[in-house]
Picture 1 (cartoon, rainbow over the protein chains, first blue to last red):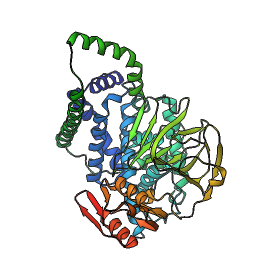
Picture 2 (picture 1 turned 180 degrees about the vertical axis):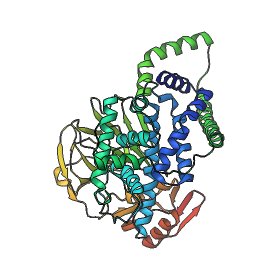
Picture 3 (picture 1 turned 60 degrees about the vertical axis):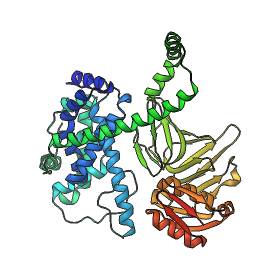
Picture 4 (picture 1 turned 90 degrees about the vertical axis):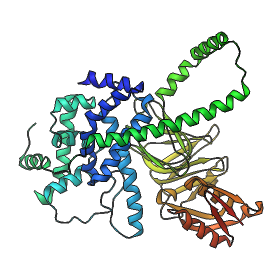
Length: 181
Length: 292
């Protein structure tokens, strides 16, 4: 799996469009689900997914073939989600509305926790409170059903690191879900 | 990995989330290919414009000499070439802002017409950034010191959020959280939360003042904050933010000063407001604005 990805990346780096199409086919669905989990809007997720791949192509010369491709597109798409939220939040602030999703690195004011289904609350905490790498791993595990060794391969990490990150995510979730459990 | 009852419940429920269906891959691919072609044509156009400029100056002698010259040039430049591909660069054009997430969890928000550079060893043996223009930094706490190089001096932090403006018309650094140290060859000062320096070239301890506005910096909050700001400087910011050109019918107008907080999300609103504040007409035609 890893060797295949590395070969494709080498080819894309050399502007091979067929290889890029293959890469796109392999990762599009994963990436879309990863993005829509965060933005909850199909059209927006489709735009962000497309823009992410476009950016990869535009900067194909600086691809590093033995580095995890999923990490790269996770990072680019997170940037794009963040840019979108920042514009939405500035507009909302002018209209005195509370923003839907906060940014995990800023200091957020206390949010009013409405009565929600547990699974939506989990989604909110995963999107707002988990650090980026931890979030990627948790989503690949629970949403995509990937095994720990598979995740380790996709993200260039040790299996032990993947296990630790999942455990850490559960701890954060448990701490934040006290009212629901 | 042993999970207690609560963790088991979370584990179970977390996979039960229902997501909207994935769109048709091939449809998305068709749109993507179109965008790629547009980009390809744009870069070809840029390259041919550059070639036109150079061919006016260069006479092409014997092709053999050319090949040898390029060969030798490549040998000498190849370390630079490799360096270019290993260095990460992000730059913004006029009317563009971008956020960069770095490997250590730090974020850099770039204002228009700005550039940052860092190498592939970022977060391995250094956290060193080169900045031209303006950017807002949110730096994750880390044992490696985070340094920013500008033409005016170097800024060093451990973990904090602050704005750096290093443009041709001045140097400004303002801190929202934490502490930063600003240094050049001869001098070093420290800024803490709520402090700011704003100078035209060199800086000293006496230049430290307090951030007086509630939402700093202005551009992150889509505003222009003006305090006795010259119309010349304000118009430079407007040009950068909206990718337009502003012409003064009389150079004396550049010296008019403006004070106030201007909403910057919409060009027409901005021009309207500045027109009222300065009592002069702003005529916008296409992407050129003339002040009468």
